[in-house]
Image (cartoon, rainbow, N blue to C red):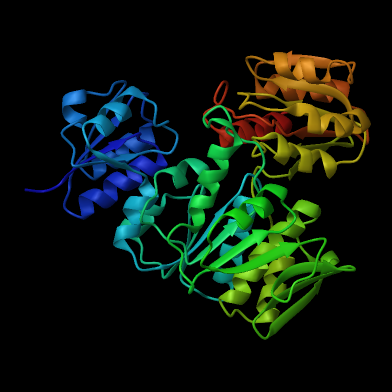
Length: 444
């Protein structure tokens, strides 16, 4: 009798898992408590996979041998709790997919910078002709790629939610960019969130590599408390290492074993302090993979960046519009504001994840002449910045936000969408929010 696999959630992760499970001979059923997008319904139908939407039918779910849960579904959801009580194994897509590939895995997590770093590493590897896929929290699901493609290397961006459902999974190279407050609405304080991030090094051995930011206080503190078997390679803007990456004057230095790469910070394609960290992490990973120094330099200097991350959109009558929709937490927005010049119209808001806006106060005081709140509940933003910024306006759509910003801005000003919040109150996801913003700018 074939194994019964039930997938909870029919988004990118869930549908990819369903396809991989079916390919491996399982009896597959997909259940989504919400409505399934048409493109995913078509995919499930094309593969003749049974599904339901708008409900979780217990009789069809709790007879599973194993449940693969999409990362967006919290463990406290009733159907998940029922499955756990019944002794059914509940895992993530990443945990399931790892059973069916022997590819080399470079895995990146962190509160900020993980998408840029993952995409940059993928860019380096692809440029030198390696057979590499980009997966996880970006692009096509890893399970789908394992099912339908045959990559020898995977660069996998991992959110804390994805890491939570992983048990036997092991990263060959694990990269931890930083740990700052995020998703505190789902975790009981910082310790739970921190533990999730450190799951990226679980199961690593002496043969594996752990790359981390030595300037991040939480990471630094946690490393002293944990048993880490993998080879540790730190990166920093403030201190030097025998092995790892650091800044010396205006140069970036990356050292691994007997190789040393030196490159001017000015030659990096990605500007700003946060992007120097991203380039360091990517450069170390490339050195570990024995990619030639000339190729690493070339890739670090010609990378085009990530959509929705400090992405210039257009200049309209001397007003620059910038899309940073991917900034879904306060720390990401801090980096965005820090990189802006003065005379800024800042578009913020969405679903608050337990945000503490106090770290933004100085930057907002210096740079923002107005704030536009794009969300259904903007009370916390008004409370945090009402005493600093005279003009704070509530809007309910990307189009209204762009038109209001355009009205408030003058030639030489910048309009920055950097929400510091999740997008699900008014948009499907951060990509939808960013795309609607860009479309509205084009329509001015």
